[in-house]
Length: 398
Ligand SMILES: Nc1ncnc2c1ncn2[C@@H]1O[C@H](COP(=O)(O)OP(=O)(O)OP(=O)(O)O)[C@@H](O)[C@H]1O
Ligand SMILES: [Mg+2]
Image (cartoon, rainbow, N blue to C red; front, side):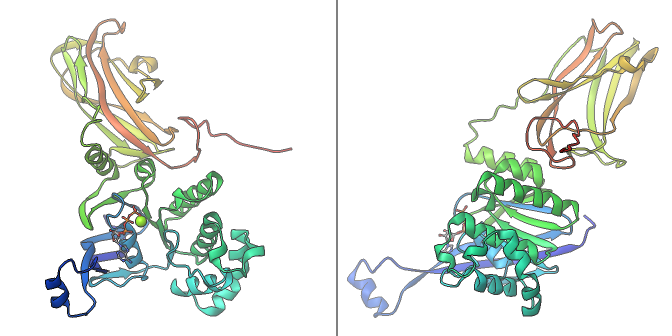
């Protein structure tokens, strides 16, 4: 990837000292000689990755796998025992409930403290203070200690600070789990807006749907170690499979039928003008499907078809080349057929692609690939939260 690195985490190790339960034998008691005895607990174990400009980077892993600890190291709230974290852009952080805010300080004091940690000068904070409080909607409570806040109020204030420092890099820990639905939606909209602005987001979440839909890359932690990183689709599938012990795997791969004189041998998906095949797209992308075919004999008037369907099997669209009169008099040997969709307004989710090649009357099937390809659609433009397609609505109020 050519985009600039905005955050680099380099061989970071973070241990915590935990008090040993208590000496369970006289021998241990003597060995300790009254000193405090600690165990070193490895919460983050030699983790390395880079986050690039404009990326949404997800961190996944089970409870206790070290996600929040890693994020606190990135935010400078914890200092790694080994390794380094370098942050090259102005950062906004929204950590798990309780981190970053001091319970005994008031909302106002915490805003100043928090914004200072994020690198804002006192003068600048004063200038933005009103905007922060306005955003949070907590005017009445701003001079009360935050320990009296509800979790929703707490998160609203933290969110208001995080986005009002005008961050180029936003670090968010599990915030979608707190707050009400409208707050979650506002967060989500903000993330999409941020991403469309080319800002960078690092996101911890247990919501695998958002990882697939929103993230460009992801990191999987297990007991403090990085198991894998890369394409979120594959990572989430592997993670989910591991969590479920491989019991819920339903994909059987493509199944083929037909007489076989002409077959689709390979399918590529390309987005925009790019030539490189992809496995995911965003709502609103221009999509090109390339069906490579092969036939050993000459096949007269073949008709190619594709179907995009939900995982439940509902066909969303199923065009064929005959619809537009593109029927060659015959095909033989190898080649490919392209079908372009100028604007795919599918909303985020996972979809199946089926392909078919038939005779002119669509009666005789040469080749039918059920489940030829499964692909993910990530959040793009337009942004909508219900249904499976966007009709690009325009709203007016009179
Ligand atoms: N201050 C601390 N002192 C001692 N141990 C800690 C401390 N903070 C975290 N730990 C331990 O480090 C491990 C990783 O915790 P962390 O909060 O980073 O996990 P997590 O992946 O964020 O989990 P979750 O999904 O539940 O939020 C856990 O075993 C936790 O008990
Ligand atoms: Mg956590």
